[in-house]
Length: 154
Image 1 (cartoon, helix red, strand yellow):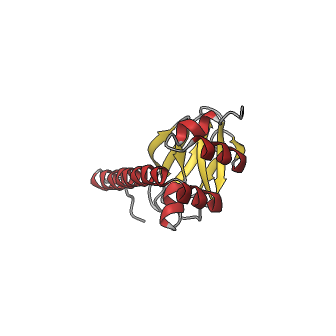
Image 2: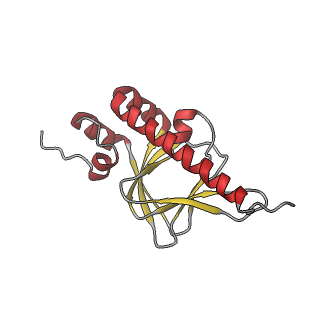
């Protein structure tokens, strides 16, 4: 039909069928966050799924009596927000735009994310695998922090 799919969607979610990629392109919103801007706050409700179109974000663990810990960085065609959307809880980490410059993302509201997971079981399975990987990374980062005595007691 001559309609092109969005490259970010195709790269971020490669297991989607072509018709689902096209439909998804109509459901996302493009948003820009400036360097250093907080996109998601730890322990707050997450209402969107995010796909990075350009730039980089940092995943940060915040603890009451310690410095922020950057667990990892995500770049173009990576995604975030999926853990809270699938698990039904609040954000397990904060996400901020890298200090290197702005980040452009495609955002997908919770209801459309749920639709997508139902419409593409292969994509849901792949995202669930990513969720487990990221939960393991966060747990390892917290364990490493405790071993190194990086938690300050008040």
